[in-house]
Structures are given as structure tokens and as C-alpha cells.
Image (cartoon, rainbow, N blue to C red):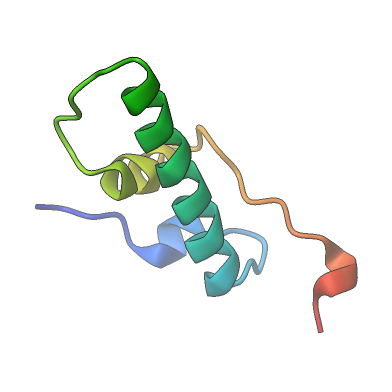
Amino acid sequence: MLRPAVNQILKNNESYYSLVIAVAKRAREIADEAFEKKEVLNEKPVKTAVDEFAAGEYKIIEDPRLRR
């Protein structure tokens, strides 16, 4: 199974923490949508979320005021 490398997903000096939080939020959305529609998922929501971020379908937006 090929997975995208973290450095392929992170752009503009974004943090790993931001990626983890963003993927977790998106995975929860995917799982909740599937539950509401009573769909069976063929792959894990986290994998789908990572693939979406790697493909550029979703982007990480960080608040610059929170960075140190």
C-alpha cells in the first residue's frame, strides 16, 4: 500500500500537529456522513482523509497568531 509522504502533504511550513488535527476532523466528517446516509465505507475514514489532503482537495489553514 502506497501512502503519501508527510512532506508531500505539508506545504508552506505547516506543522505536523495541524495535519493530524485536520485529518482527524475530516475523518470524523466522512464517518458521520456515511452513518447518516447508512453507507458502508470500503476504506477507513482516516485513509480517505489523508488521500484527500494529498490530492489537494482540502487544505490546512493555520491561524498565524497561534504559532510560536
